[in-house]
Image 1 (cartoon, each protein chain N blue to C red):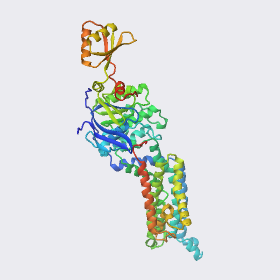
Image 2 (image 1 turned 135 degrees about the vertical axis):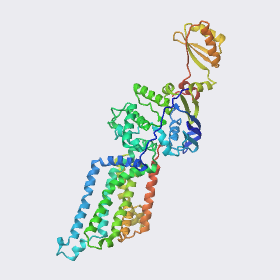
Image 3 (image 1 turned 90 degrees about the vertical axis):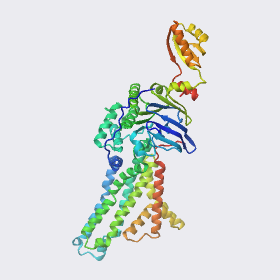
Image 4 (image 1 turned 120 degrees about the horizontal axis):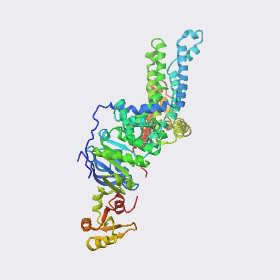
Length: 310
Length: 286
């Protein structure tokens, strides 16, 4: 198994009669990966499995070559933030982060330095000496993130990390995730809010009913779904003419003129031939302004694969 | 496809020892426990009885203070197994009160916050977590049990005529080992109640109930059904029986050492099992 990937091989986990995850085969390379699915899809179970908090009933998991049954080694390379409001309320934000570092075996002085760095990364320096009980929901989310980041882990497993954050902090946090991923770490986040992961992820893992329904980069997944024609939003100064030409020359299944001035939606089952035709039409002088794939996003994938919106 | 610089470098510097890491949790728990005024007040109150006992030992060993008194008075002032067993009885009650105050705050908040996952995503096992939390309670209970007990015993040894220590060394062993057994049992009850009962007040009441109500039920069972197996659910009687054996004193009527040991083993196992069932990193909602 690869020492650079998180690998699930035929992993199943049941809680008594209740299905957690079933027959999961998955390889997660470095980068920002989002695990998406409705409540009860198995996202948290998948995360808990890779952190060694629970063990599979069947199958094998390796996190960068380390088995989750070796917690002493695994915990050094993983940082975990639960979706729950788990920070102890009686502790200050700084104490919470620093004591978690002491548990990892850092000396008191190094723990203090790393705790301040992590709190700075999540923008909590000023509130660090306040007790967690006085924090807002967003601040509690950030302090959990700080404790997950503080020991500089190679694998970050973050359960619903963007919940409760205001737009500014959300943008800063996303930028932090991108930066951590760009350093070559594995950043795994779970979410049931599709729009937010669509914008930030290198790859998505779509889950439903304890199973993976799709995984990979969003475009790759979209291209594999043949039963739904691809949708393109096109802006053109002559939309009616373009629609007629597309029907005449291009492999289109449907074209809709939108109410918005100069916009039309084209559906095709042959993306390559379609884009080739459009390129030719533009070269012939048709004033095509923009072409945007309309369903290369997690939301569309979700609807196609799972059949509902989250 | 993203291109990664792979600039990440893992920390490879020195780390503290495993034991040093484990002590982080008891230190934290101790800070919280000792920060409660009512606990501090009870610890202060718990010193009264040991101080009275120390005074008694002092008076007992200074014959000039009671010269001229009769033989009965001399017998009354004798320091023997029964003196230390009485001391242990009183302090054991205080230790239960302390556990009822301090125990509920140890695990319940972590469970209530669903925070166990955070602990167990560190290099810490469930057993180590339980032992670390228990250590804070053990340390607290030690302050009112075997520490003053041992101090009293040593005081008596230092003041008593030569030969007393050789004759009564089993009493010292009973004070130390008997209290260790007691502290372990009380701490287990404190932790188990904290793990199972979320509300502090009710968890505290559960600790008191375990020792006093259960003991009462044990006595009633024995009396009503004219049996002896009521002792199996009587933690006070079982522990006292063990202390008596250790101190070389007579066992309470109707209680045998095997019954006391069986009762204590049974209680310890059930309490450990109760803890094991609750200390899961992930709560599964069925």
